[in-house]
Length: 258
Image 1 (cartoon, helix red, strand yellow):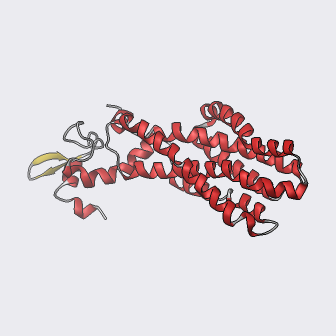
Image 2 (tube, rainbow, N blue to C red):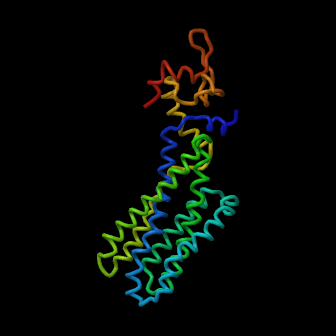
Image 3 (cartoon, rainbow, N blue to C red):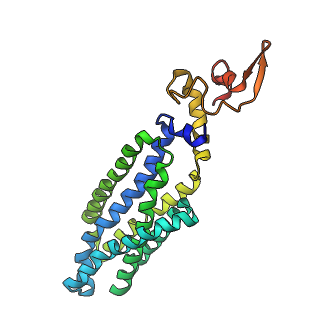
């Protein structure tokens, strides 16, 4: 049985929920960026004397960039790797959000918002297909649906920013844009986690499997051996040769596990 097939038959566990949090936070910030612009429009209209048509351009700038970012992300993900595209898109989005916050005029602000939408679109469409590879097929629908639900947290955060940050002063709208660049912290977390392949994810599950296999809660239906036991070395105990993992699981597991 291939490693991918073994992963597909595992029960959901803590590493899966950690992936859900990683992706969900990304979607939350995407939702926040899309909604917060509504609270910026009155300020920038007063600052730069914008017409109604110009305000419409500002409101549609990020979705316009989002569209092209989503189109490019699929091709770039296949060519350069989905994780790499996701990380670079997030970094590009954060950079453009800072540029928008520091924009001295309407033109630069508008262009920065378009490019911020480009980065958000590329990052957003990559998250779900990339992380769903690690989720058992029977739970992928639930996983992706729950990921999408994180957008609502972003809308709530945007409302709070509009209520408490934007009215703080003349530069309140700029600080609101800076807050939308906070996802740069996610970039550091995602890089530290080193998510990138099915073997990586299998390695994060091994320790938890060994702790719970005796309760029968992991890898149900695959067999009496855990998924990582097939190629384990054998040891001789009381004249009987047994896989080392069997010795590790039960009698002596507390000696090895922290």
